[in-house]
Amino acid sequence: MITVGVISVGDEILEGRVLDAHSQTISEKLLGTAAQVKWHLSVGDAPGELSAALQDKSSQADWIIISGGLGPTEDDRTRQEVSNAFGLNLLEIPHVWDGIKNRMRAHGVEPAENNRRQAFFPEGARILENSRGSAPGFVIEDSSERKVFALPGVPHEFKGMLADFVLPEVAALKGDVKSGEILDFVAVPESKLDEWIAKRVPADVLYHICVRNWGQIEVRLPVGVSLTQEVKEEFKGHFLGTGGLSIEEHLIQSAIRSKMSLTTAESCTGGMISSRLVNVPGSSRVFPCGWVCYSNPSKTRELDVDPRLMDLHGAVSQEVVEQMAQNARIKAGTDLAVSVSGVAGPDGGTSQKPVGTVWVALSTRNSIASHCYQLNGDRTRIRGLTTNLALLALHSMVRKQEIPGWLPNPS
Image (tube, rainbow, N blue to C red):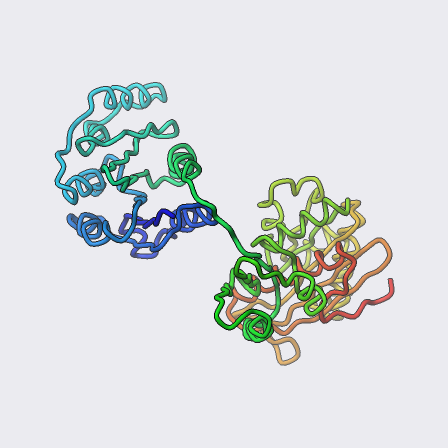
């Protein structure tokens, strides 16, 4: 087993202006392989920060993967920092500089003199060609098979070069890697899951519980332990399936297998449900369209919601949300439709409908059902939870299960 350390470079990461998604990507790609990520680290752009981190951490991992700091500007110091950390000279590679110039000119851009920095590398480094941008990466290695990879930070360049150069080396590693069962849940308290699982796993065996996002939890069991059948019986619709997948991935897979189409009508979530759906490859096979109707007039104009219902009951009501779902399904010609309308806050709540009041409705060809939730948290959390609850309703219906906590209404 190869141990891996990950270093993300950039003041923008430390200041919170940019999310460090690269570390997450590396860990996801290496999960279940013979290369095990042991630690993540973020450092700034100031001189000496990366080199100090490398000197401190180089003995704590077989491989280190660095992202960022390979651009042409003064604060892009990864090449020099790596050279300093390992006592290597920084050398210009003329053919790389020629390639950078040719690439930029082919795109109608005359290279600046500072682009030349991108043609310098630690002595003895193996250069990694970047077919997606102007910043080549590199890898240095020693006789003991210790390696340091340096990849650009631009997201599409980073992902491409990770796939082109790092993952093939991971795939070539020898080792019998076994992974335990991964169970996916939604809308189950973490404490309840832990209590239930602890009674069924040997006391001396580790398992892991991870909260993935608003209300979704995954449980990673040790190799040789299977609880799939038991959790189906115990948690019913709250159990999504196995594999470490998101609720939308489970939903799309189930809908494709069942040949059931679906659509969405969103108010307070503002497109979050449909966005989650279309992020899943293959979703176009079951999701033709959706609606975001935030204002009352748009609900009438786009979904034929009777304005008298909104005047009488308000937009956040059973009557309105059920009509949104019913009309969206008919207009889209789908088997299912889910709709949501709620008070996400921070303002807009009343004593009858406080912030966190959310109605979710589900329409099928034969029935209409709805449920009112009272959710806690800020605007972001309420919208995120609403999205998961809407996806859960669709997932339960596709699998012909009762929607947890709901009572069906006759159509």
